[in-house]
Length: 253
Image (cartoon, rainbow, N blue to C red; front, side, top):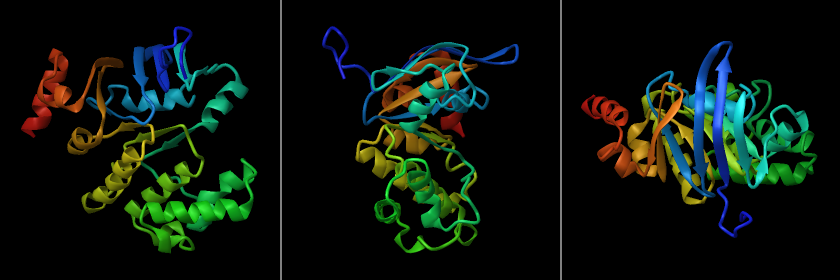
């Protein structure tokens, strides 16, 4: 997708995004562009607005100002049709797995493609089984969520997101609720997706993983973007005082 001057347009472009909770401004003037196939990590202290940004993008916390453009199409958050179209191209995975406990793993993955997207059941199920194999759970199609570990449930949630064929995946602290020994399995899946060119925004406190896997890192604080750059810059040679202060504490601990 190119603009009118022929230059390529970002896959996702966020300009001047503001979000408020009542009278409190929680995101202010967010500017961020994401290229197709990028994994962009969002870091910063708790309460800096990282998760709020993901929720704002999908309209769970509607922005009060600014512009969001995905694949050349702007989102009108006041229009249900426009927001629905944006959500059709976006998937969000939360730290809580939000799986249907009364459905098998296979049904959890296929319910939206079949019921909402009206895809043939055989096609949706075949793709779901392929996705389960991709996340290392080929033998769990008939299991129920309460028969799985937390890490396995989170990998099912990621497979469910992929079944929607999204242009953008938003990952919000997807390892925060997991036991430490289960974290790596989920991170390995995300890294594989990054290698395959899936466009992702990732909020995580797993700094080592972000340093290793992200193409770019966004440092946020107090509802603003402080600094954006490659991992080597943000972690090892930050340009902003606030980033330096944050990273010095992370590295020290």
